[in-house]
Length: 220
Ligand SMILES: C[S@@+](CC[C@H](N)C(=O)[O-])C[C@H]1O[C@@H](n2cnc3c(N)ncnc32)[C@H](O)[C@@H]1O
Image (cartoon, rainbow, N blue to C red; front, side, top):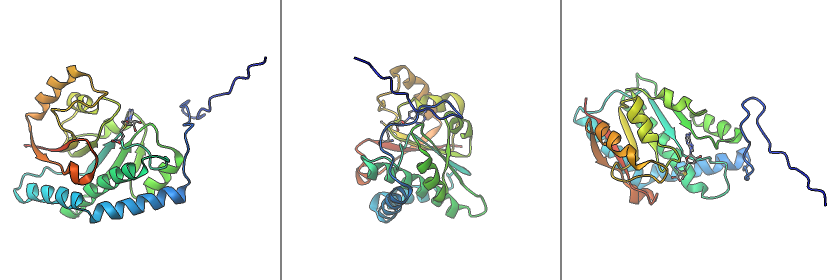
C-alpha cells in the first residue's frame, strides 16, 4: 500500500498554516455581521452597556480613549456559532461608536487580533472600520488610551495586559473567574492591576454569552 502525504497549506508570506475549516464567502459573512450588528445595536444588552459608559462619563470618570483593541473574537467567516462571533464584533463596534459620539474631536481606531482570521474576515471587518492585526501587534497597540475587549481567550490576555499596560478600560472575563487557558498563577498579578480600576457590571445575561464579563474603568 502506498501512503500519500497530504501537504499542509501554508501562507507563503508568513509561514502560517492556513485553516482547513470552512470559510464562508464575503457576501455571507458581511450579511451575518450586518444582521447581528443590527440586532445587537437594538438590543437591551447594548443599551445597558452604553448606559453604564454614559454614567461613568457623566460622573467625569471616563478616561480619554482613542482606540479599541479586541482579542480572541474568533472569525465571522466560520460556519458554526457564527451569531455569537458576529455579536462579539458588533459589541466591539458599539464601544468604538460610543467613544466617537462621546468625543467627536478624537478619532477612535478599532483593532482586532485573532490568529484564526481569514482574508474574508479581514475584508469584511475592514468595511466595518476594524483593522485585523497579527499576533502580537494587538498587544503592542494597547496603551493608556485604549479600551481592551476579550472574552474567553485561548491566551492569557489579562496577564499580558497586567504586565505591559494600563488601558483606560477593559471589558473582559470577571477577575474572579479564570478563563480556561489562563494559568491560575496569573491571578495575583491581575488582582494587583485591578486595584487601580472600578468594576461595573456587564449585561452578560442579556448579551446571551453565557460567560461572565465585567467592565473595568481606570481610576485616574
Ligand atoms: C474559546 S475561543 C473564544 C472565542 C470567543 N471569544 C467566544 O467567547 O466565543 C478562544 C479564541 O482565542 C483565540 N486566540 C488564540 N490565540 C490568540 C492570540 N494570540 N491572540 C488573539 N486571540 C487568540 C482563538 O483563535 C479563539 O478564537
